[in-house]
Length: 78
Ligand SMILES: [Cu+2]
Image (cartoon, rainbow, N blue to C red):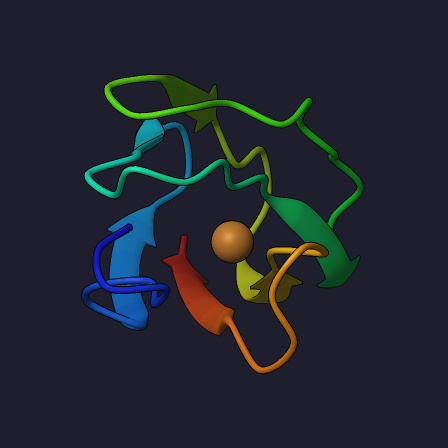
């Protein structure tokens, strides 16, 4: 998370591979799944992070609910 964006905004991982979002901005962010999974982090500040490990293949769309348009896509391959 950098410059009020997910960087990179698209990432591919394998089932069981842990994904960690780290906040490199000076403002709070969060991570909330919109489709394809169900997770929602607390807000966290600079240097904070949140991790999620996908259990099944598919496409997960997620966002930061604080910042409109701050969205990302996680492609999970089996
Ligand atoms: Cu944000």
